[in-house]
Length: 389
Ligand code: KIV
Ligand code: ZN
Image (spheres, rainbow, N blue to C red):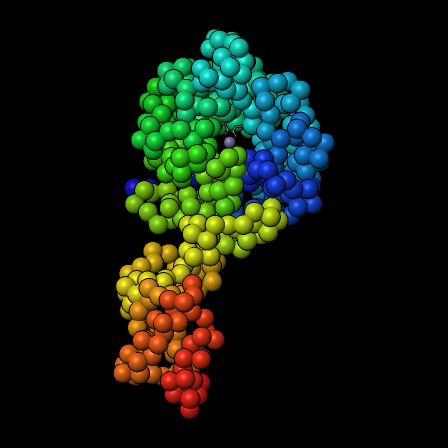
């Protein structure tokens, strides 16, 4: 199968920054935007220009500084929003206006007190306004995850006819199951006559922990853009995590899909975003968590030390992480203990390790992790003349 490119639309600086406590100033946003461009993202959603003068300024500065990636500004289906987004993007080499409206019956009734027909007209109108400023217009059908497929297809067809070049199908509430989200994209591919005139984009939230799975289901069904954030930051339980979708496509080559992301930059940018946004990364986070390449149970350690492929599907270097770690706990085994002694410079034979192991498990039962200094103590107690080589 020929490899197809999936564009990576990073929204760390917009959906990610909406997280309470993650607010960034213009200088911080600009710095992250430059790193995102270095990482190889195709589109940077720089902010929501109408939301505050500070965000307008951030989007303007990013638009001026970014040379290769497309810079995108969010707006509602409101003329003023679109006009302000266009002003902020004025200096961008590749500007994109991202505009749209809620299309689920929940949104149509509760948010807009409106009807499907009226919302369809507003959708068409906002795309037309945006097209007066730029040829690159992305339309979002907010809460598409809970929008009736037939109505969604009508909206998508109409906005493409009005000039949308990208159609974003957000699962705003993180409600869909992967087969439902993939099915929704397939429905659009098969039922929107002009769908070949636009790129379909996946924008998934993680309320049920399915954002990554749903985005992958979306691209398998024909979408060619994924909206995601570093470390999966975003409203509530977050957005699709950039590092996860990129590595899934890289690992599963049989899908025939690829991105332009320089994967060795994933861990460095994860740390930078976490530090700048003051938002720690959970240790067991895929790809970028501190435990992502740690092995602590005896069975895993033994296999890993014989051949890393037994328990690691990614080489840490490939994602810019520190080398794999053999962590010593009460669940660790003799091979791991011998390996760690060896790293400290001690060459113990099998019998030595058997004796030391009995002492080691006593120490390990009394604490969460056995450190180098504990091992040095054990080695010196067992064989005081043992000297590190
Ligand atoms: O989740 C969502 O629907 C959004 C849109 C504004 C694109 O973030
Ligand atoms: Zn969102």
